[in-house]
Image (cartoon, rainbow, N blue to C red; front, side, top):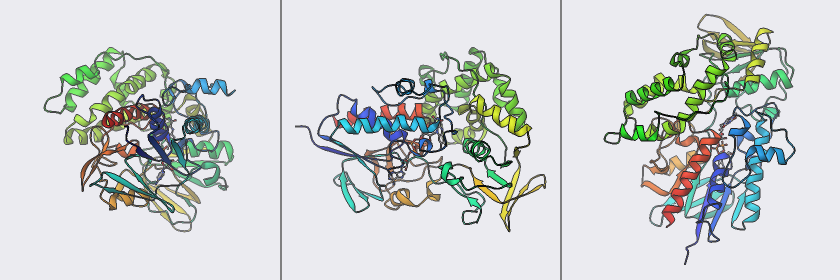
Length: 474
Ligand SMILES: Cc1cc2nc3c(=O)[nH]c(=O)nc-3n(C[C@H](O)[C@H](O)[C@H](O)COP(=O)(O)OP(=O)(O)OC[C@H]3O[C@@H](n4cnc5c(N)ncnc54)[C@H](O)[C@@H]3O)c2cc1C
């Protein structure tokens, strides 16, 4: 007789929807498996990135490359069958609609799948019987397996301004967080994709006269070049496997392989280091070299899943060196912004509506925010918006479920961000060792999975985790 298995998925974003979809489409799925999913009503089936918000917040990946799960229509098919124009870059909100529909349609046809519109407040683990006790509001339930897919940690607050009046610590959803911003001295801290969201929202929807974007480097993501099909010839699993010695692959040999691949694909490796430090000039360069940049980006995007898998074979010192020297170059080209977004930024900068200020040294709050730069310039800002991205160190985010899991010593921080997991993404507890019935997916595995937070990679890794789960059940 098949034993009943109670499963909880904590979080309702991309990772959760992907796991759910792969779960129900696996031949091992049956009526004895019960799946409960926890998240708030607002986030269920969407997660923060794809929540109900301004339609001007765009996906940065072409529609063709954004699909989820297994056995469902692709995103493009879904757009067409729901009378939406399948444009290259849709709003993130629309992708959220697609995801949510996918999740609710799966839950509707299976009596053994339940959506709980509440957060998990606490989780305890009994190593004697291998079960989890989950507290959510007044409810307490026991589970045999747990999937932790809670997304990013809280926002950073690099200048410790959280309590200051006029400071918007977490601007999302922008339709709410920035709806009252009506100022002529607005600053945004950060220059990544969230900062670009805020710039677009303020200039397009709020019609503010000008915006300052402050950061240390001023570097923005690159501009997505022309999509190119890439068939890897050198940077392959087989080649990398042959480089493995005593469960390690040296960074030097990975670098050589990558350079060989770039040369084979006709990519000038100097493009990797093309940044001049002048943000506007860098954006213009990308816009006028779309084919060359596209080839570089699509080699990086193609190599990414493979590198993510072999990342765990780097020695500690190689990982440190990689993160310090090479990660910034890869990151710039890995999640590029759509061309239309770059063109808007250039237009606004030229018109004096957008000021990109790098070399930010300090920000202090007196009557106003005083932003000082390395060049000894000062800016006086009345409304300051935090777009610096999430915390990476779980110890700095010891509230909510992370705090509870740390407290029960179920999870432990990884030196490279997120929490300790093994190669199959089981949690490694400092108290009881590897917990084989607790899987993690999403940015909490950042120390083990390199740059794996895109929809494509989360979906691929969800499939692996689910296969592993069913193998363990046998
Ligand atoms: C602004 C932004 C734009 C992005 N744009 C793109 C893009 O265009 N293309 C792309 O590929 N990727 C993009 N990404 C990357 C994006 O993070 C991932 O695609 C994806 O959203 C991560 O999914 P996730 O399920 O791991 O985490 P999330 O989507 O963050 O979902 C985690 C969920 O867990 C819930 N949760 C947290 N704590 C608890 C608890 N205690 N109990 C229950 N639930 C809990 C949260 O409410 C949340 O809904 C973007 C990210 C951001 C932040």
